[in-house]
Image (cartoon, rainbow, N blue to C red; front, side, top):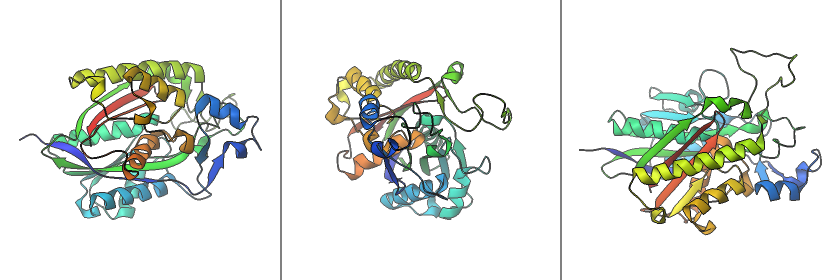
Length: 324
């Protein structure tokens, strides 16, 4: 008998501290009007001193586990999408695993930038379909503000911190219908962080230091094109017309990109989950944060068809079609 994965529970976590566009005006050469008109962002949550990716991931995980009625001892695996881990190693997933008391199950991080949660979800889905695991915790968590150059107004206004999580359980009926993942490393220079371990730190270089470097206009064009293609791919793979979709839950990077995808699907914006105005771009945290808000607000109901999609540095992009 075929085995599928379904979402048994969702959860999320946001730092208490909020940084509005008006707050940014005090130390960045920008304005609320400029940011909002170009991105749709009004505010973002920012971690406080000592608050980490693992802290947010743990809170989101506990909320999802409570919603699913799952104990730590039932977890077979933890997959955590992040590009801002607590440490290079051990993985943040291992840190969260220990905090939850789920010691012994597999735990690892996935780095696909803003697509991290979609990639992690797809990996978890494959393990359940293969019959290897029955219950998997999937998390997307980021503290992007830790790696921002606050003098670069083209990037520092975009990002926020947060985490979202889901618990996947094996089921006879399909919850996750399909996932579709892609990457193009040839576009690396359009969106990246110039510091690593193997390449090291080169203080003499112009772009030295942990920071986000982005050619915004080019990223926008590639994102719209890639998301259009993966939306078509997802619908075709499932033999569905776009009218079958109940909700679009997109990566919350830029309202213009979201609107472009909705237009492609001929979906009214009241069937699109929008959190970018409140959260900014939380990278791997954005899709599960939006999903959890949609579920807990009562917008998303059991049995409805959801399209999740994301695009990030790498470039990476992907989608998940889910019968919630």
